[in-house]
Length: 411
Image 1 (cartoon, helix red, strand yellow):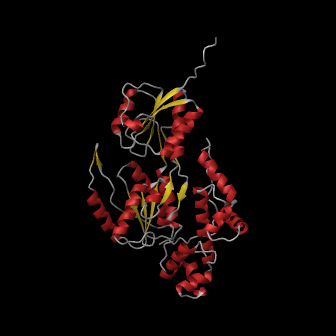
Image 2 (cartoon, one colour):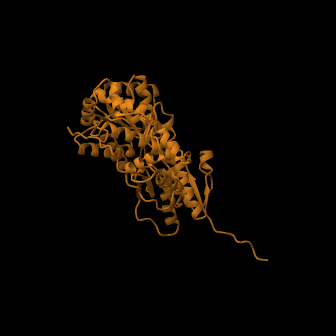
Image 3 (tube, helix red, strand yellow):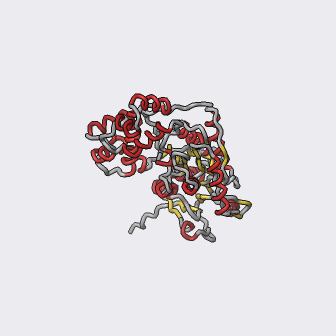
């Protein structure tokens, strides 16, 4: 009788007390394809398994110097996934912090902001890199940014936090900012805290303060105002880290000690989804459109009547401030919401999406969608599903052409 076939499987430890679900999803995609056995006990126990001696380690080691030092001393093949300081000499995969900062600056500049601020999480290398990218892109347009206090302070292995002091200092700094100001925060947690402090200080988001985070996490929907966020592509980061460890385990080594993963793009929500305009009448028009875009009877004349202005005068002021017409803005708002609905609810009928964004007739909706995004709603939906399936070599999708071109004014 033939002996049963036993497959050889690498045993890989995921060394982390906590881990982003998207990052674990990327790791498991590679593990399934290469017959890895993932040991993830530490996600539940918070402690490194004693005496563990498998094939290799994937360490999510942000702000865990003792863990990383222990793994380096163990001699086990190890790849670090981190956005913290490079405290050990191990191959590492991290977000491209400068690219994230530049993308954030572009997001605000496209909305005609002139005043900017940075809200750090810590004063570490990752925060400094992200700020540097933000400042570099702003400088290209003659702009600078103010620095807000960090949310946390770490001295050696200890956290020096006083939540009451931080909130009080942050609120004071927010009230000193010119209005409107665009604030870029290191991560979604910091951004949500900024929004919460804005509400305490009676500052409207996004009218007085626009806020952008990083991570596109669940925090975005739970924030006091739905939070816009840079998608830093943690799924790809997890996958590429596993791929790098596979190369090390196979004896191929690694050509680089640090691999940086660029962001996928920005998921825009209410916290930043308004142009920074100086004309209060145009600001009111933008707010009116944001509240009434789902009305299929919404017209340029209706917007002008609601503001008590002539259509001609409002059109002129609107174009001067935003660089686009009122009609183009109505279409852009509807298309952004349609894209969000298709992304968040892929099983929803196209005709239902059309009705929810205020467009009567699925044919009209599809033609408008194609002009705005360069693809049909179904193609857009398919692209989202493919992205969720996480193919091994996902091409970077170019940003769609948009009918709205916000004016960027240099000092």
